[in-house]
Image 1: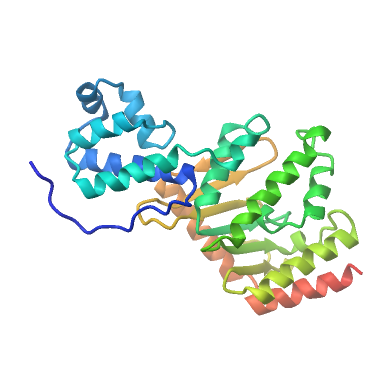
Image 2 (image 1 turned 60 degrees about the vertical axis):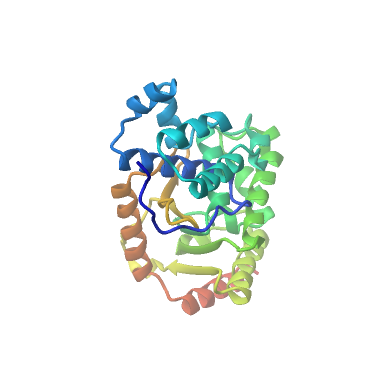
Length: 298
């Protein structure tokens, strides 16, 4: 039976992150399977592959060869136009991204986060103690990594700085990654690396806000705000260009990290971010405070 026509989406952006392309490919295949009322077990039997393989593809963790995708296209009765879109996603997902060079340095979960971040179009970040990595100067990043973290070997410092700076290239790509950041006031007052390093870091934030306010929305929660919803729990919410790809949350603490994709939990973080933003200073007030604290670092 031919499938009913439906509204088309734009083809995948060929410059998109392989990680995000794999995720969208899996989502679209899962949606079609569920639309047909088929189970992953049933699809596995029909195609001669395991249920675990089907599930791995659907969550974007298993690469899909061309012949396997062709099998699924036939089983799912996918028309030629959508099949071409899925093939473009499959090819993009097979590409080797820059962060794979560092796979011996970082756990798989962090590498997946780098892939999601590279393919995002908007990041909402809350930090209570440190400036977000996407907004750090190299000197500030170096001061953090040399600040006595027991899990970072001295010989790894330069590579980790390379990764942090490489992540920031996404800010200058077209279209650029947009940042909405909320920082606790302690974040801009903690003298990471000493007054000179911190002054340069704050000047960098002020410069981004002044030159590109549409891309960098930075807000400070002042000490006077008291307790607020996000207090003490840094996190990032990543949103993507395709409406098929849902928001994700990245949360990282000293010894653990987690990618959160359950819709109800992501919604909780989104609400928390919004309520915290209401307690924060306005954009102009935040810019004024950042400049004031920078002057104090002289």
